[in-house]
Amino acid sequence: MISIDGAPDYLIDKFLSNGVLPSNGAFARMKKNGAYAETLLPVNVASTGPSHVSVFTGASPGTTGMVGNTFRKSDQSWGSPALSSFRHPIEAETIFESAMKQGKKVMAIGGVGLDNTSENRRTDYLHMYPVVSGPSLVLDMIRTDTVKTDINGKVYTKLTTSGSITLPAVFQINQSFQLPLFIYVTDSMHNNANILEPLTQIIIDTDSDLQNGYAASVVPETWTGMAVEKNGKQYNTSFRIFKADAVSGSYLLFMTAPAEVFGYPSGFLQKLQSACGLWPGEPENRKQTTGLISEEIWFEQVDRLAKYSRDLIITGMKEGNWDLLFGYFSTVDDVQHRYTLINPHQLDYNAENGNRIARYAGYIEKRFQMIDAYLLDIMNTAPAVTNFVIFSDHGMIPVHSCLLLQNYFEQMGFAVSKQELTSVSSGTSAHIYINREKIKTDSYLEYLQRLKQNLLSFKDSLTGERVFELVADQMQQKNYGLYHKDHSGDLFVSCRPGYSISDRYLTGVNFLVQNSFDTAMFANQNHATKNFLLNGTMNETGRGVHGCLATVREGQSIFYAIGPDVPRKKIKKMFSLQIAATVSTLLGINPPKNAEAKSVF
Image (tube, rainbow, N blue to C red; front, side):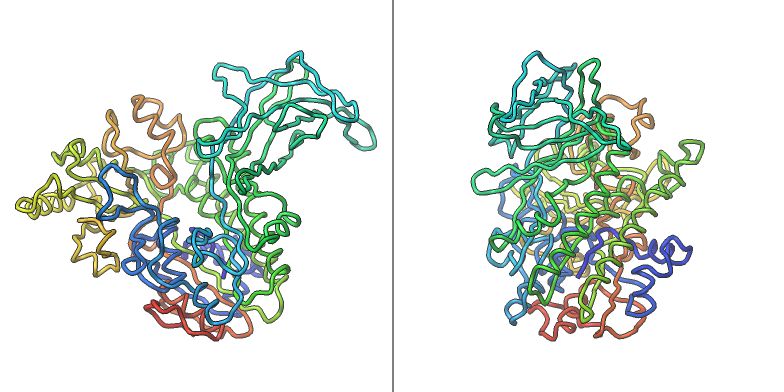
């Protein structure tokens, strides 16, 4: 099983038709010689967390409890943070649990709900999807007069942070641990066409003594990883030199966000790292938006992670004795969030004299080609008896405006500031929770109906369109597989294509803001709005966002399968809840006990 996060069915169809995806590639091979779905309907609230959990269990969000990427619990205190579908206990059996109970060996290389926090969230072989545990850094540094030597007598000059905003050189984990970094520069020699040339080398160490070696060494145009052990856990980061000016003695060094990595059983992580290297880190979206890293560096991060994901899967296939292997690619999801530009209402649509559309489309096409090639690498490496199921959790909706729902409530007279209600968003959808301590039983129904009618009638003043496709109370949520007695909001809303939802409550920001990551596009906005757009997440201010209803075409997913036990078959319409049962059929086992749909084979 391989998940291609965010791969929309309509784009794969388009790219196969127009030749962007080659006729001898993985998708073309599967379409010709295997099974594929013309339409795969994801669950409602088609976002990474709830969608993957429903694929793994075959059960709807109302059964799994994952009614959104984030949600509240009915008995939690009003001021406490929302719960995460990536961390919260799953209330249904997964395909991984089911397979292991029936004697199959399971390997997972990343995966929602597979984080080793309990026995049923671990597989026989596990590489947990790393968890970001601290901030990334861009360090503006200058040479000092302090020099040190290593055990071989080589001389290093100490660097110190400088600039208008001086950040300490610190490896930080969850605000509870800070490890000072000692950074030096020296010249090494580089063989360029048989001519030795000096090459800047920056050394990173975790103590002040170079006599005992150092933690990492990085030279220009390359990335170098570093691992730190703390309290029995391993954290990975990577370094990249942005600038090295030996004449002025100034340097710019980038450190990716530290991330916790974990493998099971003992030794499995080390085997993977020995073959693939350290976790490269995720692309730094906010730092690209604010200009701290370039677009080129951002794509280097995307592409390094894609290659690493491929290498993990191939290495895992070779290392373990497995019956079911799950792998994961975030690549096309990452790129579409930033670069989906196809809606004329989008703020960037006419930028660069209209040429930005083609440039951004090219970025997206290239990453689909990359994943297609990597899938082919995996297929060609796998044993001949291997069956493949390739799917996505959701598609991607082009978005032109973000609705700050809390701001809207306040302006409409529903007092977020007095804790009457709150919303928890999942991209293009949200659950709305009414505080029953503030809104008493005798006025609750009137308040609920007034709120519902207000949302149903809400229109965008620029387009004249209704913003919401669905406004559902808890009874109506049952029809969409979304009602859970402890997690569902009093109302659930889902936007029409073009809109995303933020659950931030921000003074000075209009409740409807046009999205862009290009600071030139919102240069005339007030400070509060600029700050929101600079710091928005991909599911708030992205040009592409997910979390929609299953019926939205751009949000629909993919299903492809190929292998000796897979029939050649075109499936007219399929549901993501059928994937777990389909995989079970290929494995020759019973489906997970909560599965709600049957195999397509």
